Image (cartoon, rainbow, N blue to C red; front, side):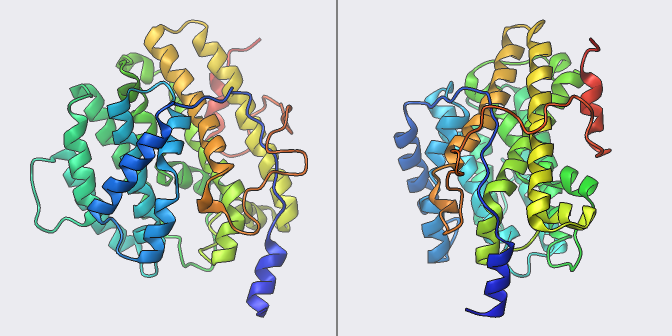
Length: 359
């Protein structure tokens, strides 16, 4: 074994159980969704590298979609599963590959945004990912209102700007600050378009005034953040084994707090559980006075957090020797490591706690 390989093994961490009190659920059409999505992905030739194609083919996009949106209608659910396939392929095949500079990502994401903004304005220079997103945007018109299409476009803008920001850090010898990383990762993981799809897939429409409520905006960002942090917790060992990069919350905390990875892991789990507790409390507060459509949206946010974890617990994408196996006590834990309602000392997200009603 090489010295580099030995160093990576030393830095690998034990599996940790997750605190998530949201009950599990799963759409019954998971298998059909996955079969349709994989066939579509192969026809679209999103990737030409055979190894990458095989990795994507076993990602179970149908299972991810069925677990995160179990309430959905089949046709828009299929569009959601296809969107997952494109975003995962874009992340693996373009964002993470050698030479994926911020400049290159800015060019690619600008073309993507043009396709999403004006899908009827064709381009002979579309990449496979841009062409696929252009087609999905057209098909979305059958299920989404003009207001929902506008929201989806803005969500894609959040996502693509995050990709460029992320690319600016890849390959650098240092890491971003914790404050910058939290803001960066919640944008670049693709959660903005995913949560914009909740009402489209569910067949309801949340009024603008409700989505712009500071409490609901906080719940939406908390959902993005929980999914991004959970991803870091279960994927870090895979990243180390494949030598992808060290742009991970655990490594950022190591740098920020000058501690070794195992100590950083404890701190990240504590941070993550405090945010999960905030989500519970703030969601209950919003649901207490919400109308039907807003209630469905908030429940959709909660289900995305739970469904993402259910999918990750068995997804072959992370099936490395040290991947997301169950922790000694199981994949789940009944209590959070930290149930404090005090804000985390991270300026970019501290405002979330301000939305809680004072007792």
